[in-house]
Image (cartoon, rainbow over all chains, first blue to last red):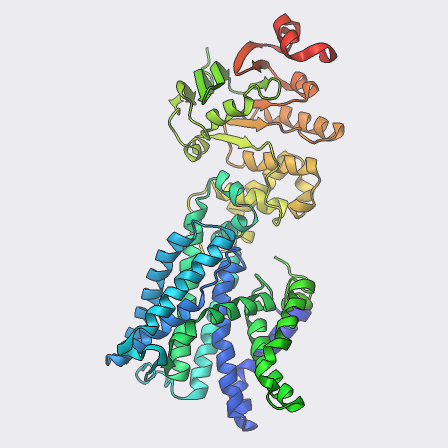
Length: 322
Length: 250
């Protein structure tokens, strides 16, 4: 454990986690409340990216519809809340249950395809959920729905920004812990083996489809968890949270951070949002209105990462040992 | 008299008008290396695919370890102890040699829906995997990525993976393919050692290897088994010499 701190990766990660744990105190001390909301968003998106990393990174399954789970988690909370069910103890398990069912259904269908067909079919299913939510006139349709935050009795008040941030951080750490166990478990080895050579794994006697489906469902559940948190962060859900652009952003974050790297989703999310937050004002400073077009700069940056740093940001921290 | 480990009787397999397997009977005794030779297109791989369960014969029966397995699917035959190594090298290139064999062991240890325990410290997988690597002479290469092993070493690794399930019969589909003389000589030595552990059906083009290893040889020509016998009998068989061995080898 301590030896890990001496590697660049260990030291950077430890420092980062320390900083993240102290973020609410720091933003309060320097009176930068806005940064706490950016931090909260980074943490929630890291959970979503980590869940995508379980199937994309370990399984080699490029799902282009992962934002659907944002929406399913978010809307499950939103619809229950609109119907007077405020307790998080009821909302959260129900939201996860719905996401698991959905993941099992679309996983069973889309995992029969490979490569670009898998990308397209996961995208299609996500669009289906997107348009479905737009059509929910009773729940705001295209405009979305204001909700009240989940209640957990006296245990934790989600309206308190610092408490909510810490809750999200704890859930992120739990997600990363699970992810770190998964990758070296029997299950994780089957998943990674199938990514490496599916035919060989089948010939060894592994029913690869079943393991991939299970991975898809697990990733869907963690994805929905981030959706639940996102809904509680803004006290608002809308179809926009599951647009295909968000699915694309999630893939970008995973690739940027380092595909299959444990902390990659966190590095990726921090970079993604830092660039968005700071590039905009920077470009506006150069010329009023240029900030709108920050992605013109961000896009080529991504291409450079994809071409020259294939392990993403994680690879800048030295070789991985797994 | 001991019962054969594997016994195929009167197998027939047609692909449209092509008679790929024409009334072939073949058996393998426990601890025996039985070689299957024949020119390209003689139907060797078709025959082996029926034995492994990748293909189902039109007529005929296959018995393995005292059971009729003609209608059993591939994975069920694997579970009974029938393992196969591939004509094209198929190892998991992104994994170490040890991980490759450990995964093969894992495949025989029930389901893998275990999400938390670390396989790298799981001695019930690692110990047999390490022994398997040592048995094929790759003990020192355990932590090397499979992709960086030499071609010959990858074939050895593949045999270690096939042996991981402690099979009773090993079907070797051209294990010497693409090997240099030195590497194939080492593999011949290895297969001879493994003979005590399981019977083998060996498909091979390398005649030196076949005649060095085989207890019996069956010659397949145009889907028919034209001769079966000891290496000496096959070498002396006029029909075989004419049909297959040609001037160069005889």
